[in-house]
Image 1 (cartoon, rainbow, N blue to C red):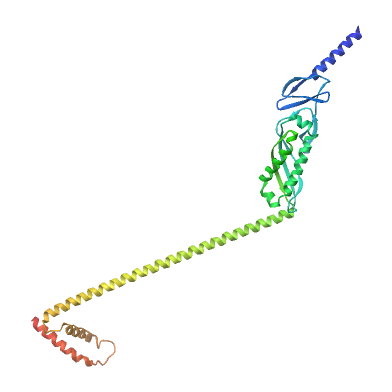
Image 2 (cartoon, rainbow, N blue to C red; image 1 turned 45 degrees about the vertical axis):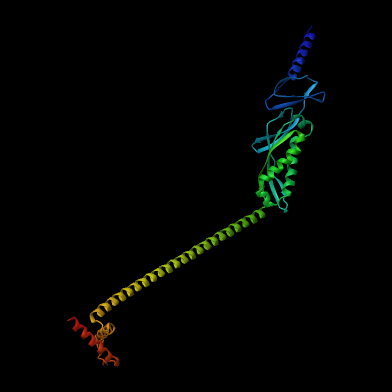
Length: 326
């Protein structure tokens, strides 16, 4: 009787263990691959599921985790029977890559991918994380090998896009979608960095000299234009001044001529038909000139010119005109 009870107790424990093993709870954003007698049976989505113990068994997949401890962060790969459908990021270690112009550089890349077909990720590739890592490294070497160093440093977006297209196409048969590829660091050798810094300094100095020369050129041009405009304005002013001066002289001469003509008309009217106004005016000018002769600091001999005898007739005419007025 006791042996029978023990047997029943062991059987109950066995049934309980089988029942527990037959219940599978899958978390959100995870799936589980179930094999029956070693052959693919079905994919368990998130929720509670029941499987047949012993006959049904979850298929394990290689997965990579980021672990942190006192030595720092590092990745570990282990087998697990659940597949995470969330986007995963891999930070690949630095690797040496040779550019088209034979420069050995170090590149560190980030890869963002997501499993879209769990069945393919299990049965189409043995170790998915290692396969993605090796594929990324070889593709990166091929892409960088087609570019020169300057293109690698200035065309990161183009390199990222090209890597994403190649990796996405290659990993499609593994049920993986590559969303983004990012190049974190591109480190040339020290001697190349020193040469690049010298080149950058020389380029900055060249640009500074060019800007300084352009500034001096513009300054000289503006100065020359200012001098030209000042000379033009000065010449224009002198021209206007001379024109006004000539106009004033012409007007004064015209006024003087008009006054002399009026005087001649008055004299002619006063002398009548027998008088000569011109002789009168000449005699008047002559008398005014005689007043200035002999004046001065030094004693001088004054001689009457020979032509002065002709002036006496003009003086007689003046006398006759004065007699007529009286």
